[in-house]
Image (cartoon, rainbow, N blue to C red):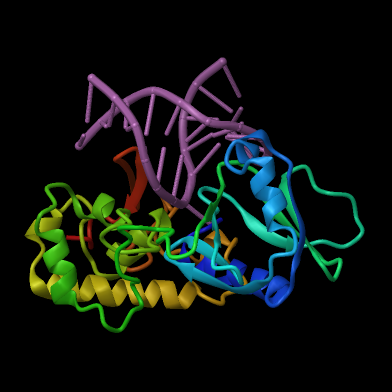
Length: 255
DNA sequence: CGTATCCTGACC
DNA sequence: GGTCAGGATACG
């Protein structure tokens, strides 16, 4: 369930459970994860102290005292769950146990999530664009990063090198709020339109961050609403496919 | 640019 | 049985 707001919330859960503690073990329960972290790497984590947990775009960086970083990405599904004594759910793909005995589960139904270990000083997510909510990011800069793009704006918003953390839902939501047609060429957007888009991105991300209703589809204005009336003008919302992903938009008020 | 691929699960 | 799913990447 992870775009920026959901990852932000998950990072908070993980941080609260693990920050400052030493790792007792990291057990991998799915072959896809075992392919990514060799047994000797897992053993090397034992005893390492976790100094912090940070989010960068949709990436999660677990910093270790020895300088290494455990880099986690949820991809299409994924969440952290602090475990009690109940039996493990089927979708638990990894279990992180701390020296305190506390256990945190990596819950990932799709099993597409990734884990990597990076050495000290290695950029875990190279090429990642600016955070949407970074106040230093200006509409002018964003427009400049659109300029070399040839395709439509919607897929460009999903390009993490352009702007970090935006996914399929909030790209659609932001375009709806900015009243922009998702098929417009990114490079052709005027300065005023990019300003509206950046403001809309910040608005929808901020609104979703901290929301406890991140699984409630009814909170979306346009995403997933194909055939339903546009909340602004009443026209039927349409679904099209761009770059293999669904795009929802109002054909009447998104120009 | 589009398409396939990695996975599992929900739903028709 | 098919389609769809909040991601990212490799390839034609």
